[in-house]
Length: 133
Image (cartoon, rainbow, N blue to C red; front, side):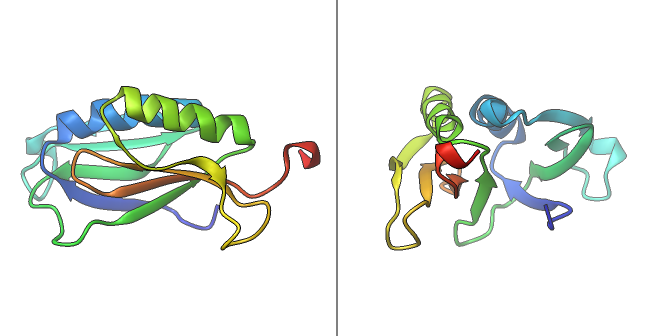
């Protein structure tokens, strides 16, 4: 992975924490660290999610950006994309593209898209055929 971390503001960090923990569980991503308002420069609670002990996805209470952001997570197999989509819907996400091949990208681009509680477009993608894994 070339991205070290990303951080963005959300309307309600606790709501987003519950959503992201559930939606990203199929990817092995969970809350690694939380910082209360007294521990941060912004004076807002921060959550860091990741795997292998390193938080790569950070969000905090604040005013979300005017335009929704797009974050794509890599999945090791297509079944993980399906599991992400189901878990994200169950956690209150809104469907923004059911799991399937996106031929406009390439013939092995299997992805699903969900809108998080703030309307951000969260993608999970597997870019290989399952028989290549």
